[in-house]
Image (cartoon, rainbow over all chains, first blue to last red; front, side, top):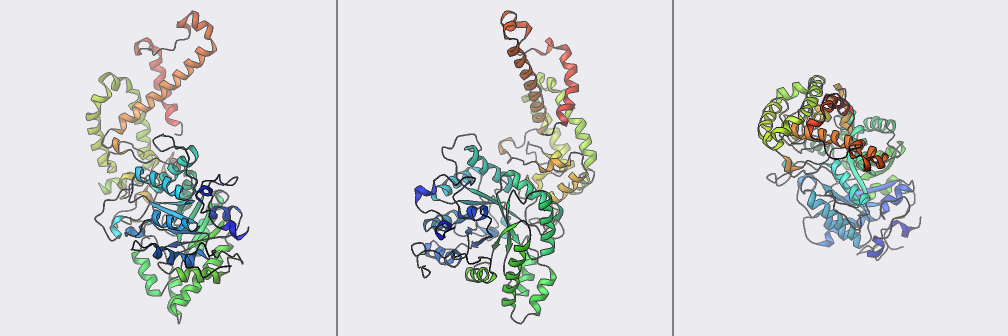
Length: 341
Length: 205
């Protein structure tokens, strides 16, 4: 695959071109996964500003090393620049983006409209999420919507794409060409049903999965065993979620306060025993990526670190998963481009 | 009530059996509901349903009951109203992310489903709730839907017959009738209907 094929089309007419045979979108992430390459994605933490340069500053280090950039949708129920706004900025310069949709803030009318809009500006991937409760965010008095859940949302978007109609049955003249994703959290209860729930997501329309942070590899392996037993490894691409821990204290705090994060004791002890905890956290993350690569059925990694995009870039490069794949953007794409080749 | 709701989930197999007997009865009574008018029956039946299911399941009267597919644990008690399974925020002890004192509704649901004969129905993808049906009776809705299904099956058979014997139907319309028959014209049908209810009930939806 030439480097040019790695980029998403920015020409508006090409955005709407018929996807390659067997593909449901023109997204680079889908191309990489379907070619059987180890995919790498990361997330861009949205700025609290209306300045597009803030988005490009955060995206630049990621764009060099990932196949798609997720734009989070008010994660943790905290208000930031919208996912659709960020994706729209990213697609303008040819970066592959993943629009995240949380069911917490918008009802079915808003979401279906947003999806058409996103597809029109060239967003090729959509990640369907339930979303955290409003209570954990910065505006706990907000009204929680939850009109859809992640699974009914997936089925709705698949219907829009494949049947070319809204949930009301009204026709859509051109369906959104999108690659559909969902999240899964293999390391938290109820453990036995996590893989079954994944199956339900695949039935509903999920084509790729990005998991939450995984620090407990044996437990994840058990989950993957069940995934393989259910015959899901051929039906969905699984990207394992990893990220660096800053320190033992931060890890303890996250475990206690952030919903859905499980950090086993041995990881925290290893951090505590290290001279430089930050560097050790980075090392653990690189090891995790290499371990994930060896697990059958894992198609890639999703590397997350809140507002530390440079660190993510270093981790991905040091892990060696790019295998010489040169994803550096061309000058015309990166606005303040230093990386031209 | 929380304790009653948890008790029901622990005895989900028994409540599944109760409903297996109850649903055919609702459908069997379709002629009664129709005679009085579904519209007129709505308030009293919804009143009864609200109180009975409120006590047993903490029912929120969404009007689109799916308890048989959710291990007898009502998904509307999930603070996110999730209809398809637990979110990714369940605590280590299996409790709710939003209400830490409450056991996750979906952890309960999967436990309840594991005890039920039709427990695998939990893997069916459920649509989003139609909020305009909130407060209305799910029982009457089930009766109407099942009765309608039966009518549709019967009509399909009649249409097939009329098509296969079209010349006979043209000359002798009564030989392969298509028009809706009044209930009194089918005394035998009534008896058959009550048995066919069970087959409908056992068909996975």
